[in-house]
Each structure stands twice: as structure tokens, then as C-alpha cells.
Figure 1 (cartoon, rainbow, N blue to C red):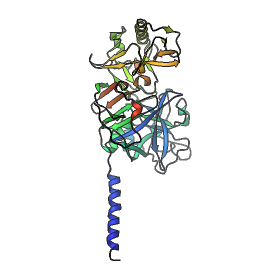
Figure 2 (tube, rainbow, N blue to C red):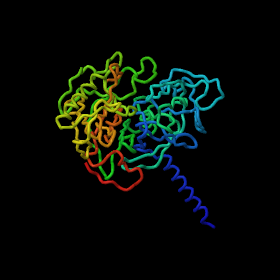
Figure 3 (cartoon, rainbow, N blue to C red):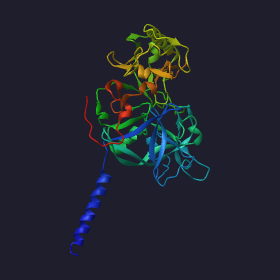
Figure 4 (cartoon, rainbow, N blue to C red):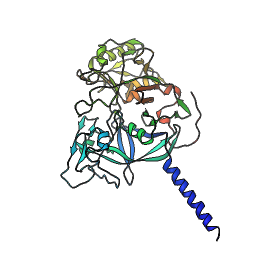
Length: 438
């Protein structure tokens, strides 16, 4: 029996050490799966939130201000908290309003709580709500494989209403905003675990991935994506949200496209449309995951479409009647298929320098609408477009796009298909070692 105190001491030491190791684990990076919803062409992710944890499916909104969820229906959590007006949480959220609720208290209905403006950026609908905090659990990563899950005890989010879900993918309960804001998810994740304010998105037609933090990006069969072209991220001085406060800047990601080419030949249009007006915020180029295809101001759309049709004709590609919402469609009869998609004229987006070019090949330019018809996946945004060029989801798929918020730079890979991998090839299940291929 004399050995019992020793056994107890060793057991206590083991339990203490294990608990300390778990609580002190600080991930270098986090991951979220990003899945395309086939019926809406929206991209969704899952946020594990509340106590007990609930897997909340939300639309992935690259430029959204913050996470918001429907608190009207079935929001139950032992760790839900309503920040008091003028508190540090309200200040961080940029909220100057103070809300009152005249119904019995519940999540989304509290008194003396800072107000929010949940924004459905798909339909352009916003409403009043309140800010709140709750537990969120998210998986860590080393860039190769998923690691253990970690918790953020007080992630800030907005409470929205059920009607705001109209137009979102079925089964979703809100939107995950990744925009340039103090409470955008990339900034909150970085602050919670003291890693770099950097994140990367790799979308695909199935399940892709979003990385948060500074890790290598490794896809099966062990392909390291490292050689990214970079260009400055621009700030639009005027918010592009559905509703916003006076003086609020846009949380969306703008880049400085200076030229658009088809087969290396510049397309003629008014280049001033590619600049952001310093007073109105109109114009420029932004990147969006809520627009399924690239949207262009009418004159740019017409010029690019005309140039593409002309280049296609030189390859004996036959134009056929258009299929909405597209402006140019073609027979597949004379169109070959390569590793990087249909063999059609390339489109180039030229950035701040002539040698920094975003190449759009067939996999990212063409949409299959029937077995024998394909269409150019760009749509007309109208003559009064708020933003002149919106690079949409199709053009982002199987491209790794990195947003470095600290240095205000965008990194992009162009298509991964030429590297014999794609954005569906992140290994979400295995923990086996990966080999590196530069």
C-alpha cells in the first residue's frame, strides 16, 4: 500500500500535464471546408458554434463584414452573451447604435445591446440586428492535413432574422463574412491565436478549402503551392454593403486590374472604368464568392465578348444562340478538351504591372449548359454597375487566392489544373506525411 501515494501523484501529474498541453495548444493556422451548392452556385462552409456545439451551415461570403446567423429560430446556447452598449466588443465591431427589444429576452432580442446590420449580400437585403458573442470551434492545420479542433470562447457575430435567409442555399442559417473588418472571421481568428492576418481560399465545384494563418498550402498528391503572383489590395473608400453607416469603407477585396486581353491582345474600352472613384466608390475590380460568374459593366462586357467571339471564330468555333444569363455560347463540335478545360481563347487580366497577369483558361471561362453547348461564363452587369468588374466564383475555382491583410497584398496561382492537382485535393482525412513538389 506504500506505493499508492506515488501512483496517485504520477496519475495527478499526468492529468495535469495533459490538461495543460491541451489548454496551451496554440495553432499556427486553421481550416474550413468550403463546398459548392449545386442548386444556387453559392459556396458554403460549416461553423461549429454554441454550447453544446451546433454545426451551422453558412454561405461563404468573401467580402462580407462579419459572421451573422439566424437567431430567431432554434438558437439555443449556454454561452451566448449580449455585449453592453459602448463596451469594448461594440467598439471593436464598429457599432455606434444601441438596441432595445420589446419581446421576452432571447438570443437576438436583448436590451442595452449594440446593434448590427446583418447583410444578405446575395439578395442585397439588410436589416437591423444585434451583436453577440459565443463559442466557436474550428479545426487547426499544418497546411497538409487537419489537426485538432480549438475553441474561441467569445467570437463576435451578428444576430439576424429568419426572413434574411431568403435566397441563400437551402439549409444554411446565415453568412460567414471574410471581409476586411475588425470582426471579419480572418481578423478574429488571427487575434484569437496570435497568428498572421493572412488567409487563402481554394474553391472548386465540389469541396474546397480555406486556410487561415501562415502555413504551406499542400494538396494531394503532395503538391506545394508556393509560387504566387502578387498585386496590391486596394481599399474602396465607400462601403459596397447593402446598408452601411456614413463614412464606412468597403470590406470587400478590390484589386487594380489595368487591362483586359483576349489572346494577348488588349480589348478596347474606357480604362477609367477600372479605377475606383475616390468620392463615390464607383468602378474598379473586386473579387466575390457570392457572384457565381464574373460580372462586367455593359461596355466592358460587350467589348470582351466581341473580342472573344472574334478569336473563337478564327479557331472555327461555331457560335450558337445565347443561353441566359450568358451573352456568347458556342457549339462544342470543334472545341478540344485539355487538362485545363476547353481549348478556347485565353483571357488575361493585367494587374499593376504588365508581367503580373491573371490567366483565365477554358476551365475558368466556359460553362457547360448542355452536352453540345458551352457559354462564356461572364455576364452583363448593366450600364450603372456599382463595380465595373466583379471576378466571380467560376473564375476563382481551382485557383489558390491568398489575402495578406497585414501587407495589403493579394497572391494568386492561376489554375492549379496544370500542376496536376486542384482545390478538391486538400487531404481533410489523412494525417500521412506529404511529399513536396515545387
